[in-house]
Length: 109
Image 1 (cartoon, rainbow, N blue to C red):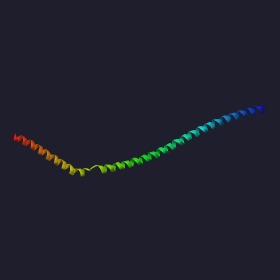
Image 2: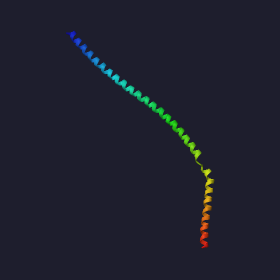
Image 3: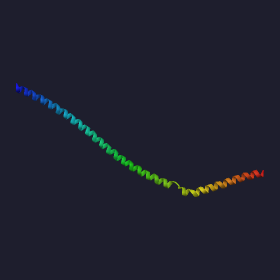
Image 4: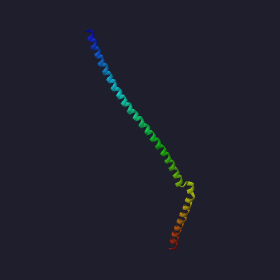
């Protein structure tokens, strides 16, 4: 009887060990799948980082171009001052002539 009990006990232990090994095998497969997903995420992050760096460089170049264009296209305050004085003088002379003409018309009547 002792051999029979021993065989039953060994069979129970074998089934228990096989069950545990199957459970560990499925856990290992789940961990491998999670690691593959994590690796894909890391690769995607690296790809996004590279794209972000490219966009940063491109924006910096465009900023330099815009700054250069604005320097080339616009007149500075110092360059505009003489023209402003000329325009103000011409408008002043025209206004004085118009007011003088109106005053002359009023006086003649």
